[in-house]
Image (cartoon, rainbow, N blue to C red; front, side, top):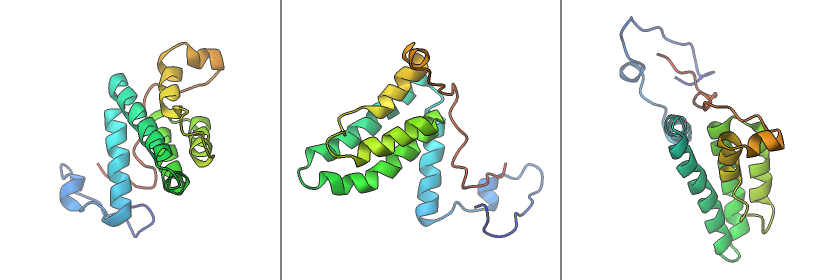
Length: 146
């Protein structure tokens, strides 16, 4: 059930949210699905590393396509920032990601992987970054009924 789209419906005890309400369709359903999967996978530090490397590789692949790189980055930059925010809960890291993906010739910087290093190695303490141990809850645009 999406927040702000009508009154919340109560469910009898024991009824699951998925059986009472179909998932949102379209872009909202897609965003919610990605957010839920990222949060679920990022509970394990090695899956979080794999997701971070994947985010960085996608950003790097756009750099490999001449002339289209900056056009692709217009779409990838906010998505990358959202994914990094979902993974690490850091507005600073998310902001760095959107800037890094938006500026020309900076796609080679592995922002998501640096976030993992900051969380799981001494690099974060050395830089003074406070990265959360656990991932954020799923996308806050949606109200989750349990």
